[in-house]
Length: 258
Length: 80
Picture (cartoon, helix red, strand yellow):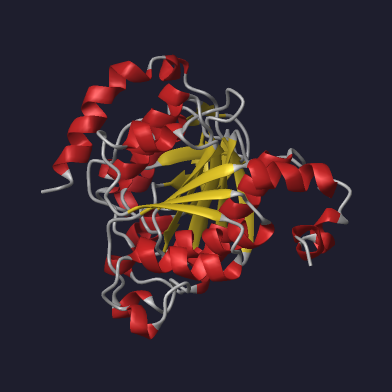
């Protein structure tokens, strides 16, 4: 059995074919955050045949993570997320090269980590990290795929792709008050599963180059009503100068460590 | 001129208002005026962080509502 056999059912799709499969094999995708969104996206990125995956997470696995962070099992509690994620993904697809970064993404390490990848998946649960990813991606001209959830709702978008809008075009500045995350607000496990898969889908489309991406839109999904809508976002004129905003966001980022 | 406004609340805003949507009639005015009007029912709403989308498009709050519209209040999400 060679790898072509493994991917035969997706190679059969005319939009993918052998050319698309080769693009997947050559692609380098960085997933920041190996929680609910990250575990979901990573599994399918690996199984679809993305050649190189990077995983950034500083956290260890908690018992209360297991219901939604489905790369991890009960015997993994207490272990670093990136180590276990790498082991599980290697079983799923041994051909996938997996780089792990067992640390918080900071203004110091972000440029050198992000530089090595073609596209970034923002699967974090921290708003300062999101602004950091956004600003570094702007600087380095990398697209990033945003996903975030709140109770039964999810947001997903493709930012900084082909000169499209960035996260700051949607939310120019970090919120005044802290927005609560899953640990504080609760979450139904299927929601990060769905939104993470939407992020993986957008990554695969960008890598292969088919379909229409969410660039220029933020997608909103509501699990409770099963409604989906796309909200159009315009590019901000001030986006051209991310350097102006850098100091502010780096301050915000370093604040979050304390 | 009275316009029908279909309001949709997302994330923490839905929690703040206690509902995910509502219909109301609104005389011509800006989005800011509409939000000030909503503030009467939901004190503190104007201090919340959110963007406004009019008919599925993020819109400046100075813009005037000139027809029946769907307006979404969209806060940032932090969960992952």
